[in-house]
Image: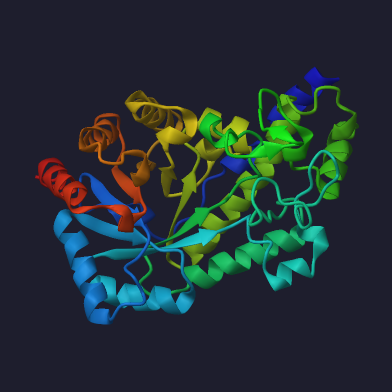
Amino acid sequence: MNRLITLLIATLITVPLFAQTSKTKDFSKVYSEKKFYFSGWGEPNRKTTKEEQLTTLGKWAEAGITDLLPSVGIDRLKELIELGSKQNIKIHAWHWMMNVGGSEECRAHPEWYSVNALGQSCRDFHPYVNYYNFLSPFSEGAREYIKKGVREKAKIKGLASVHFDYIRYVDVILGNNLQKKYPYKGGKLKQDRILPDYDFGYHPNARKQFEEAFGIDPMDIEDRAENPAWQQFRMNAISSLVNECVEICHEEGTASSAAVFPFPQLAREYVRQDWAHWNLDYFFPMIYKEDHDGNMGWVEFATKEGVREMKEGKHLFVGILVGDYGDNLQDFEQAIVQAHKNGARGITFFTINSLNEAQLAIIKKYNEKFNK
């Protein structure tokens, strides 16, 4: 039965996800002026004066930073677009997608939330951290709420793109170093297998739709945690939502991008995120090496894998966690080199405010070298 489901799902479910989006303009030109880009998640300190913020933006621009991805509201985005234009810095709306269930509107709709294999709703059970309030891509109400939020941002005049984040399920598996930070049932968390507490995607609609298509409730599949068909079915629900949101962005004349997990296969296994098949204009894999016990080879490997699996014509920007590098300027420099060498279109720093003067000098050096 499980083998039959796997074969059926490959033909029945995935077909519509690969349809090309209709475009009224070429959104790939958002990043078209330079050969290699430097950008960052964050913003100048909003508590400072506009003059001070312009000075900060000017310092970043002087180093070669051309794009910022702030996680802020609409009014602040408009303000940053105006400020950024004075320093030739484009602004992208860093926008949370599935993990937005903490809002008052969402709390009023318990049927919107993601559900784990134990039947626990993310409305009441917050895995790992209290701010994990994931909605379900199988809830039509949740999908409409998420799409409404995307459209509100995409309408902003002068915005370079809407940048999706948390467009996935709760982490089925954490990176090895992250596991060490969390307790589990009186002991330490060890995810050497899939634990039902963190295996999400069992929304009633998901179970019903799967059973209608394949004649079996996923709860009755013997190897449901590992079953490739059930995994793909859940990933497809996220993928279809992404592609609908891409269309919304394009309808409003705005490009789309997303922060995704380090490389496609890891993303599928860790957070049920099949990002290599999305219709996004740009991809920002978060290649945070310390989360996964990685060395500099991690940056090289993850970049190669992402570039290899992406659709033709798409662009990848390596996301690095500045704190992973500490005072090791040699490794910081090597991360930039590896991103460029292995096919990335740019590198993005988390966070932009974490960069010190020495790191900004390195960025300036490679901006001049790569963009001659």
